[in-house]
Image (cartoon, rainbow, N blue to C red):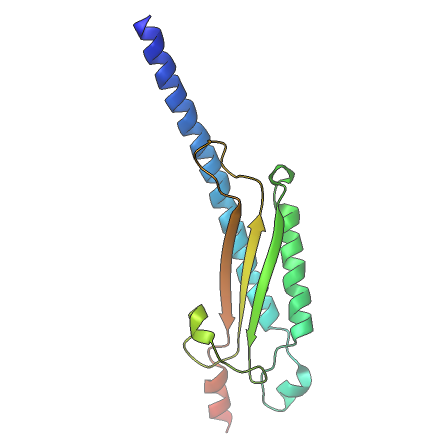
Length: 158
């Protein structure tokens, strides 16, 4: 009888470990997907320029076009995630450019005053872990895309 109890105890521990390992793998893959999507959204949004301002020598990001692109990427991520997660993807976006200004850039890790787009994607889903003592329903990843050489090129031309 003692052998049966020890075997059942070891079996429960191993099943819990395997469950945690597979849930953690799924969580890690979701984070990688979300980070890649945030980077793609930030880079794509930064490329939406207002052409008239660009012709005048200013880099102004078209807010409407950037918003549409980031929304498209968020919907694409939502579509790619498994249906069993019942996931909804939200996003936040902040644009820093010559028109909107460069205040509060340092809170996102941007030190130079160059045009940039910051995007944070948030996934709201049902609990990602099956074990009762672990709970994770919200996952966030963010990315920044900035035009590092914008001022250097402008100074060379003038």
